Length: 383
Image 1 (cartoon, rainbow, N blue to C red):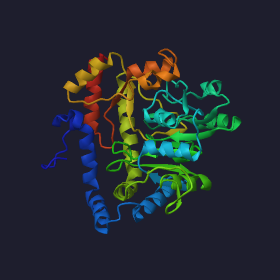
Image 2 (cartoon, one colour; image 1 turned 135 degrees about the horizontal axis):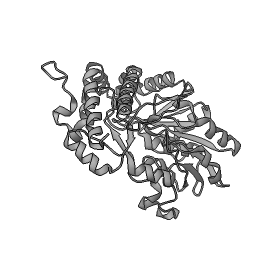
Image 3 (cartoon, rainbow, N blue to C red; image 1 turned 45 degrees about the vertical axis):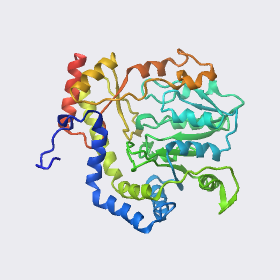
Image 4 (cartoon, helix red, strand yellow; image 1 turned 180 degrees about the horizontal axis):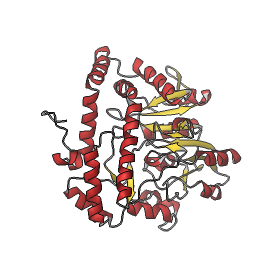
């Protein structure tokens, strides 16, 4: 809303690439007094590392998710690392995951000198296809990392059943799905360890980097807490080789405020997604598919298009920003050449990566914006 009291459509301000920043500014202004007071309290107390707000956040996260143990950490990537370290993943161990995800999912596996083993995705949900997992299991397989892409949980019953059959661990990469549900269960309760990210652009974002892990196993929780503090059992006594993976107190303070309003933000995201879907269906444009036994956090609202680059340029010229999550599957990334994989090995991931395009998505997209975006899209697609 501008100073004159009129809520102008975001595209009319010529935001372009600044759209995400403007959305974050809008959200900050909604909770400005609470957030700034919380930040000032940390500054006044000068308790910047592991201050009381860290414990407060972890208790709040446990209450929100129903998980027995929530452990905050420095970012979503470190959450994945800590999870694998807690499960004692070793060099040459194999971990099954998807090639259609953000790089960190497989990067962390490789960082520990383990081997990422890719399984293609389901073409409707874009999540790992559980029907293709068993054929990739070997004597070296130690874990499965399903990714809740774009905010929707994977087929966790099938995945957990496979894991149980072969005595594997399950680490849920829920960097995009915090607050989503699967058969009424929080996405943070779907694996041996679930991980999430509080990167500013995530559905629940802090004001820098941040992340968290969730588990119902007390021993794993204690080990993760130790690992994020350089493996300390007590000060200067190190039980494990760990890392500096703590969340800053200021970020915890911000998240404590934003978490109070997160249920409302999730509902607003769902409302935006429903309106997008209704408008796009009216133009015969294919829309995202969410299974009816789960909910999405709607980190992205992604559709499939042809001639994507040309279309993105035309939309950008109209002031409509779009994004591609993700343009290149991991198995064809240069750094994974050593896996001896090639184009054609995961055809669905490759096809989707050439067609996927994300529309502006946040809790504050207005009806007018949706009408303009969908109308412009339909015109360019000649629908």
